[in-house]
Image (cartoon, rainbow over all chains, first blue to last red; front, top):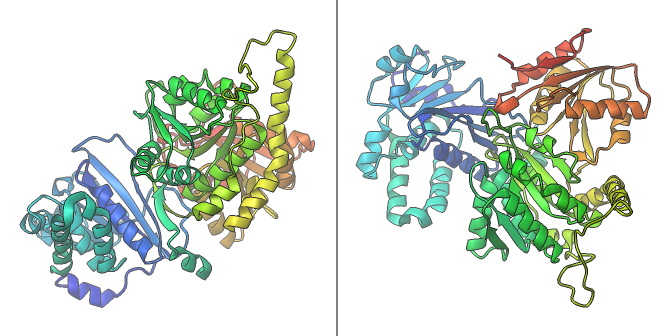
Length: 203
Length: 396
């Protein structure tokens, strides 16, 4: 299958939630907000009447150390409690993990890898050895530009839902507003949701 | 095979996605206990963090007492409960170890304190990950013990445990797997608070320290001429929980629509091979059972829920026709059979069952992952005869 950008790819494969349980692995470093991103995604799916799980890989919690967190989304109750071993999508919040950790383990070519990076698709492919669908997005730059703060974890959500269609954009925005308006104020909340939206619309 | 009933229910406002710890806090909020002494440092859980916020926000009227150790947390709970209050706390791992001196005092004084335990390993080496060592280490100190598979069971077990505890005047632990349940977000359906309040009722202590009309001594010296009689009453009170269980679970089913048998049988009726396990791993076993059943393999699961008191007779009845049984323990058995394995041997003896193969497996120590494929290997293993006494799952 050939594709030139993310949009074409979506058109050619359609809705991705065809598996019974859609499984995501976030790779990040401690403190980058992967757990928050995972929980936002899970709460958005809950809002749509879906069944969810969101849990980190329970290792030592150290700021800056590589960590993983998992999300499962399904139309049916989820009973398994094993870590995600065969993801349908992998999101990487920190490009310095590329080539350091086996990011694309069990990720098939028709599945997808989303990376917060300024590198292009070919470079990411070379560094990870993954030859499937790669969606690089400068979520850090985008969050600096829109929010004025390094928040790649919220910005990348826009790209994730665009590629996977696992939840609707509005659901994530609603959940974000509900969860954060009191905490960070309306202005900053709006900037964060704007970043999510901009990542969603980016090519 | 889409379950439309579940889907519709999931759109209900009472359907939430919470960590097991937050589910426990939600149940606590609805109970609105009088006193909660806590020692919130590692190894603690989101239970206290979430509940403290609820109290600060005025959603519960509980008096939170920040004490200086877990030993003090349980001591304060004993004092509060003896004074006639509903006292609850939460702990895990080394916290339970430090508390262990006071645990039998709570049960010996017949105080139905409720405690959440996010079950974890105990040191050394230092490890606070998911494991059942802490709760197994204190299993014979007179506390009712409930294992939970997921957030929903943490929530449901809380009310069932509290009601049984107060009826029997024995303390109870609601156990969830450390991290795997306590820190994992999952779906659950909560009840309306008035329904919960009606189910648990007002706490009416039989005796209390503040009853000035009838002054009484609590926890006094009991010499050889009376100690034995106290203990016998305790033994009978604990065994009484087994008799009460069915009524309480039935009453809970009426308000929740959720069935909570004393243990769960999953595809066990015609099973030739079965796994016995407690906690979150039971969910993974169910998936493995379904997949193997699709291939025509007659496999099943018996999930332990009430561990103390242990329902020997009922479990023996449920397992009596299974020819090959694997018992999975998440505990280090040092010089003994693993705890759940021992109880299954004891159960089978009740019915004089000796024609089945029983195997002990140790898994998941210190938070070691257990995968569906590991479970399938155990079922596969059960097909062949083996001389090995104990097997290890996922050992490097």
